[in-house]
Image (cartoon, rainbow, N blue to C red):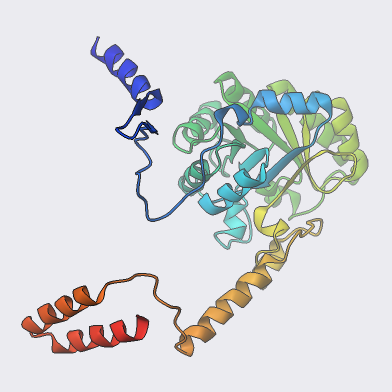
Length: 349
């Protein structure tokens, strides 16, 4: 009884409007104070949320599907504002955020931090979280347990895993059967670089090309709702796309593919550093040179601070209050502090 009453009461509080004495409608929101220091993004309309149904409809109509990686709240807000369909919290964070040379070192706990941050910032896109290396290969139970954590603790809508080995196909099947949506990944699978011999394109000979298509089909059969194709030749991508009934998402600019994914930092040209140049794929098109803008802004800031050209203070205190403040400081024997306050008041007022 108590639980039922509480549920009804909660729903009433979240949706009911009342009139104040000025006859203005007020909506009570428990999570947003009326007066806040910092503004934030406005919540998206739940009806506009991208779901698997949205993606299937777009795929059936031949409409474009956009996917971009996000690793934190700010990047998630940008994706949300731009109307990107899928936000992928990729294990590529290991390289572009944590500074590693591969995706292997990142842990599940680190991925969950990224997932939660993105979930707070992206309200419209479908949220997909990568399963970190070593968190799903050992057994079907390990795979399901990890996927459950990504949804429950990370706030994701679905997970992505790299296909290839039979154990990974089985992992995808078991996760789907547990009621969790799965995105597959074929071609260059960065978690398998030990076997692949590095970050090398796949599908460049008959056996490799056939394996890409067979793995994509196996992932579809396991129940995946889409498959990422990374670093495979155009004919191989075309063949896989033609034979699959689910969307293929290319990490490459093939003109016949309407579904694409790029790393956030790569497409923005955000990082100007030898390490990032080393891990940025050749195929990545940079749509901006944000890194140059950031570097210039930081250099300008450094130069301004060093030359003591401090911006005008936006925070005001009237003369009466300043005088009272200085008197109190003097009573406390803090003459030096009182003098500093007087000088600052004169300078900034």
